Amino acid sequence: MAFLEIKNLFFAYGGKNAPWVLENFNLSMQKGEVLGIAGPSGQGKSTLLRIIAGLERIQKGTICLDGRVMSDAQTSVNPEDRQVGMVFQDYGLFPHMSVADNIAYGLYHLSRKERRKCVRTMLELVRMEELSKRYPYEISGGQQQRVALARSLAPKPKVLLLDEPFSSLDAELKIGIRSEVKEILDATHTTSIFVSHDNADLEAVCDRIRVMPADFYSV
Ligand code: ADP
Image (cartoon, rainbow, N blue to C red; front, side, top):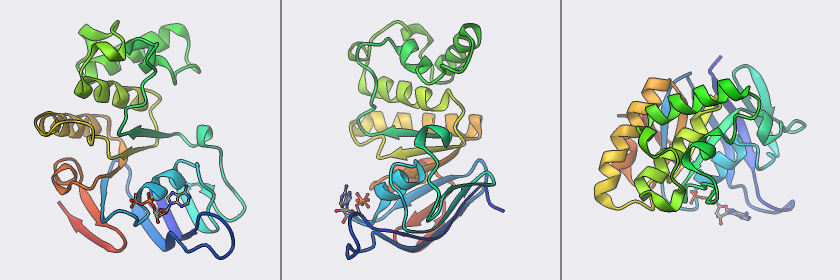
């Protein structure tokens, strides 16, 4: 069985006669794979991520992650129990917390010592050791996005979802951070789904790209 397996998924927002946003949607991913999702807007790309994260309930089909049913018509595991991480376009950092505290945020289950160790490792991974005490408003957009990535990776999610993570960055910054993100995802062997409207972003980071609604191609 695949690490992430989505089978015959149907999803609509709202009531009975609402149109399907995803209709008989299928997807299989191997552990450690980085999948890109492209396609015009309104095709359900962000919705798919919200469903995998457990933020929306599906009407039909199944989602299994690492052998466990996350969603089907009866089941919907809570978002916080899915071990799914998310990185958004607007970073979502807590403005009143330092870089280090932002990264430590999801590590409440660890002892203080383990938490400190993990934060150190993540700071190293995203090359932010020197800036650990700064607040988000004291660092650049690219640095904020690296902190957001570190914060999402720190609890070792089974799947990392990235929704247009580079949209707020200018073109020059994007090129640098793209290769950094690829290195980080490869180094941590993190199974990831990356949604972007920019094919160059996807080709720089992903192993395989799916164009919604149907086609796949390999990078
Ligand atoms: P994409 O990410 O491919 O642009 P979305 O997943 O954002 O597409 O949206 C897919 C469809 O679902 C669109 O028609 C959009 O208008 C609709 N949609 C998105 N969010 C909601 C919502 N909260 N309530 C109702 N419809 C929504």
